[in-house]
Image 1 (cartoon, rainbow, N blue to C red):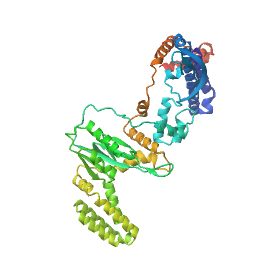
Image 2: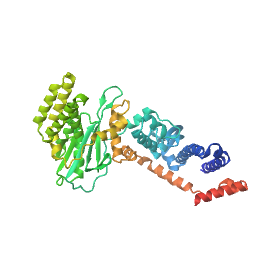
Image 3: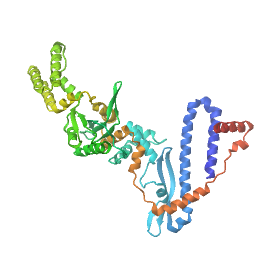
Image 4: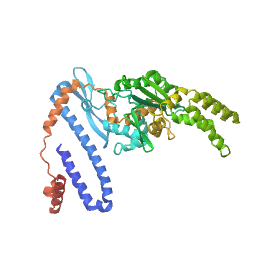
Length: 469
């Protein structure tokens, strides 16, 4: 242990002398700090290796270990830390009574048999991968080590994100109105085809913040839920039941584009009222009227006003008559079919449009498209890339958990299986006690303070005094 302290002394002296002698002139303070990071990373790696192997030696020399475990052989292992790759040696032991072989050091330190990344590296890797590419994440999380894109993919794919990561609420909220918005993204797969990760957001109110709408007290739900959409709405329904007083709650507005999976929520969420997303209604109306042309602009705007007036009056018969008039004037077959489809889209959502106009005063628009873009598309579909189905699901859930302020550290803590170390508990406690007894250092003096030149001694005393202030 004294060796590592001596090494630290020499490293600090060397860095300081080099900086004062030449680096400040040759590389400047920026270059020096770059070199300092590299030196400290190497020192961190060396120190970690030394301490791990020091613990191994204490285990080996422990009397209780000798009575219970036989030492078989010593081999090498490596693991990635934030300082870079750590290489260390540990012994393989055989338990005498059970005839079971084990690496006691790995068991005591909680290192799993096939684990390559330390937990804090894994945490950094996932945090980075949620926001940027796999390649970039693999390059920046561990000093001097590039983690492959495939390994990053594997880390995400291995996560179990069906767990509950939220704290239980003590008291149910008493409010009259809740809002739900729902939509999906379209993500391309590596081997062709697409997946549609769903997103459902439950919130209490909305605040216009400039061009953005801020949803208050929101909770995100989502992922693929392929062929099990009822599971998604079951989670949403259970959340509402557990967090809100249903006797006080009068209505839950469910807003979306009319997709059947969204309307399924009406079967699960108590007191829910379906509302067609005004964005999609407007988009359909624009499609029916068609692209505004200079020569027909006046007539097209007239049709658009007539459609809006008919819908505001909830006169769907008049709406249909206006649409037929537009269709009769459309000479291009493909456009006529498209306009007819959009007309039927409106007619299939008359309940949602009725609820939209009847509740205008307490509705504040549906921002589902914007949330899909921000949460899903920015990472998964806005750039050309192909995904595995499992990672579409897990990346979707990771992005949603991030929106709900759930840290990756909390997610990883939930992943960990409890490693049973009861049979090694005595060895662990005895080793810990022995190390605590051994590590009782007296203050260490820097050799240069005692043996350097007069100028060096003054310099280092001034530095240490400055650090102590």
